[in-house]
Image (cartoon, rainbow, N blue to C red; front, side, top):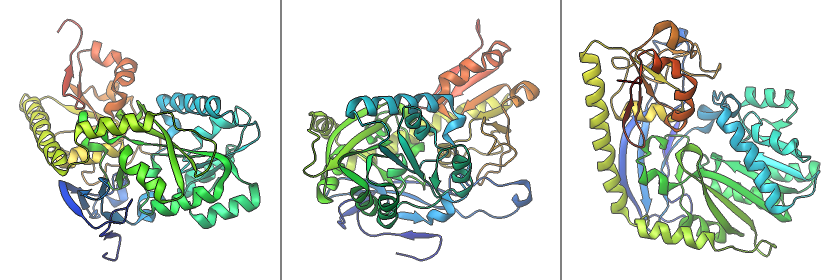
Length: 420
């Protein structure tokens, strides 16, 4: 491994094997959430590799280049609570978990990577004791001030032991998308094992590799996401680390995610056959073969050529284009497809934490959504494509006024004003 803000590991993150093949090479980018203010527009932003590797031993797909997590997360600008869709998702999530496992009121729920406490708030409102762990210091402080106690730190086995000493064992431990963010997944599972009550359950959500491949969701590949999970490697990983993946299900968040349920070996949770069914699906798709991901790269190139041609035609006609949403995935899409300030005049986003800043690398200004009405661009490219339907519904006046929406993924589509 190399030193500095980015290092490259040489073993699989799940099984420790060294049979690793490069299967997809995306354009290097700055960290996906590295927005800058006006004072730092002239400062050069370092770009790091986005090379995707396939493990020939356990079939896990992953980045081996690890950007310093302090650089990525300690001054984080993403918060769940600004998205009504995610607030609803997490509320339904908490209800479903409590209904399934019948955890007693007052039992402890710990969320790893708890962000602004949106999920824990849903558990708290249903009578559970809650505790968050998140390294983003400002967001953690705001969550604590709002009544969701949050430890501003990275989760580890040592921290888990401190929590047990102070609060007791947890009935439920959750980790949403962050289980793809950490380089040391073995360390996280060691901590979860120490934290869980004997009948406790670890529930995690990650972007599901099946959906990434099926819908060409390559823009979910960025430096925060070190792991691209499928069930087959995860089942082996938990078995190797004293836990059992006893159930798994597909959910719609982030364009297609996997929700997994794991317990301690010897615990009371019986398998329901869902793990085996998803493994069969993955094998049918060839997710245990390297060539599947090489072919995936060809699909990405085809999609990129179509989007670039569309934007080139629009700009050749003298039309203006804005972006909607400044999610992390937009950095990957824009860099890999070569879309920058020449194509997009400005980006709007509903998060106050991003408004007034400039996008990573390309330095496109990020404004509040009322800029659509004030500046009236001809086209809006929805970069937060997983929220395309609610975005278009909320801003139907833009469409009715003659504007057009472009949704790049899963299929490139242009939405025109009624009657056009």
